[in-house]
Image (cartoon, rainbow, N blue to C red; front, side, top):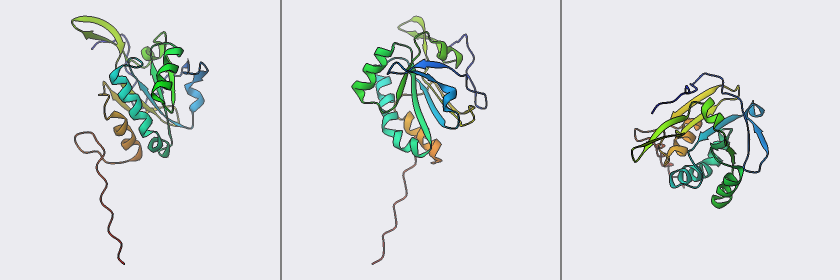
Length: 178
């Protein structure tokens, strides 16, 4: 995949932006300083893969909150589309409408893709964890939608991951003596 833009890397200051939320309210990233942010870019609302990823982030939200992180999903499209997607899937976090793809471009995730032999530009599924200081702590690029949220959650909680990318199973608790 090619891009006109460079991917923001670990250690770099995350580009600040203001985008409308699914409620139409402006959200500015720098307002989250002092809080860890999981910023995941997905290609399109209500598509099968994006729905799986978004719902899995919703399922992981309690664990991510324990890791002192908030979740935000970013994709091209309108506020109306984000609101419909959020309501339909009962997502417990904000979706941000990047209608002009300016944020996707700033983060370097607006890439050339190919489908059925036809080239087009779209979002490369990418997740950033932005630290309390506004710098990128973790980066996952071109991720698979299924299981990704659990991986992000595990990393933020310091849970070891086996080779297949899923959190390691917890050891069974010892039986209590009577």
